[in-house]
Length: 307
Image 1: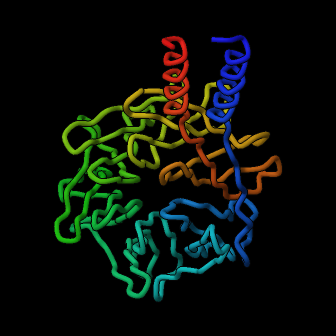
Image 2: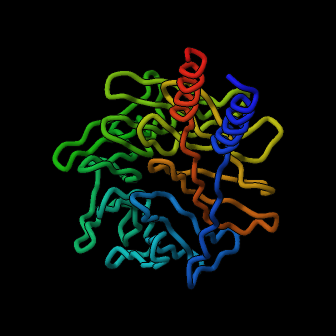
């Protein structure tokens, strides 16, 4: 191989490597009519095919759900009929789930774009739906037994049957998202909050290295996103790959607080607080892996060497 050919491959290799670590942050415009002053914040919770759902406040003690289309930049408000407050938290296709406060308590809903259906776990005082994948919904519910025993448990609801989710040995478990049969969420051991991953058979604890708190919020394929508290304070987010078991920190540049809530393919959605403690929503696009390009480059070099 000539020196000129080697130089060309080196240049291409560096170009691909730079591309592999590139990333993109997009700040979503503030929701029209929102009172975006802490603690009245606008928060994006879910994403599916370019549609984002979340909640915003238009006044004290009154939250409203929203959808935002990344392609058309169109906002739509979601209000459960007769509810005091509505929070949209998960989306899959045209189906949206979340929670609302009615005159008699806290409940959850599923909205298909036309009809609203209330969801309440049997025997629960509070039901909180957070994630949806196809016809499967996950969330958490509070249980108060006749004998005085209490607990918070996750649930899986398939439209007909309710199944409880509980990290082994713990009395606090909350499920936040689902993709296929894989579920993520949090559990508490009495002093710390940990993330978890459940594949339908077994639970795996998730703890960002050195963090005092870890919360798994969203899942898409082999990737999990969430947030953690570092030992030096503040809050950052992470991307965790189930297969490679690698952790990557996600922090909006120059901002003290970042919370990643959901992932759909290579797009992560969440919110961050600026230095004035004003919240803004974001989409973070994870770069496509350049592994195949690098392998192709290596094969080309080997063929040249053989020749």
